[in-house]
Image (cartoon, rainbow, N blue to C red; front, top):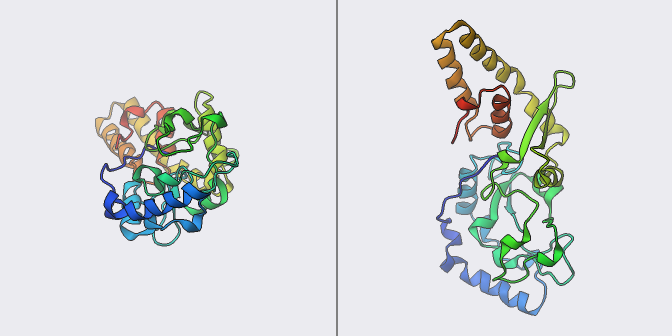
Length: 259
């Protein structure tokens, strides 16, 4: 995971005037009972919303960082679940008031969303969970890392070895939020371990070039390697979080992309 920069302007389908009727309808249902997923008008599925989220995230899943086609293998993820919230008290009606809120939406792959996160949104103390529109969400101290509000790179790191040929994601400085996020989203599932590992040889080659250039005092080699590190750690590439952590672990963090 890496930090995602969300545009301040939501797509047109989520403009307050356009979402007002849908929000009022779900508010009326919530005032009488507990909204179900089928009660919501799915404005988040509109093409302009899907495209805006995909562009915002460089066409990558917000969690696992695999590139996905926004019209095929993708979900629109409600960070705080709009209806059922797994583990919440029986009186909780879901975060229905955030269903059309731009800051609560992400572009996610189906594996992360449907097989792992689902309707989960764990917090340390259930009594702190927001239940009403005007409740302060920050009081929840949510475990799940929000890639727009948080910097995942300060909480997540990576480990690898030549022996198993896999790249594991792990917590940085024993971050509980990092640990819960990894487990909740299945970020160490088999296919991700292997896909990240496919990058190792090329990243090691660039590192060798940089070290050789420094040893020989060859400015051209150093400059070439520095440019390649910057390009290889750009935000629009899959597994940018791992790529960046790899070069930082080689003491080459000064060349890592800051986009």
